Amino acid sequence: MNPELFSQIASGVVIAWGAFAAFRASRSATRTGLLGSLITAAGMLLLVRLIADFGGWTGWFIYVWMLCLLGYVVGVYRSASVWPDLPWRAEDVKTRRSETTNLGVSSLLALVVTGALVVPGLMLG
Image 1 (cartoon, helix red, strand yellow):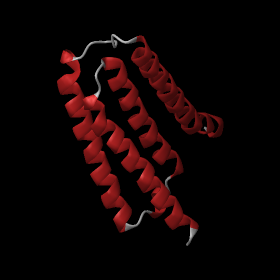
Image 2 (cartoon, one colour):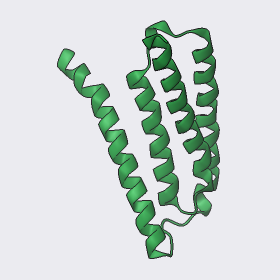
Image 3 (tube, one colour):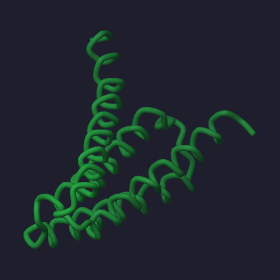
Image 4 (cartoon, one colour):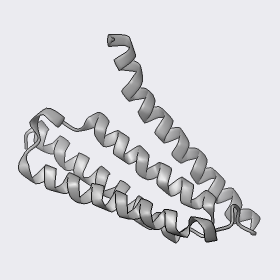
């Protein structure tokens, strides 16, 4: 298996995982959980942008990319439609701690991936 194909398969899996996280976000019980899922989805999208071979995409990967982006759009739309009905925090302390940890880890992942994209560009520019 050549490295380009392996990179594209890994990128397809990562972006599909992110699309699933975005689609699943609307099932969250609170706004904190919803934000954690959406930040995870954004982190996966940024990660694929970091590792995918954009210059040599083959036909099948473009279709996977477009399908997953459609999943992101539907997930964000569904999340925006349930946002007003959700409370900010859960009543249970254990659930609240879990949601806060998920939001923190997701934010850290997005920050690290964004830094990996931006810092080299600043150094080269």
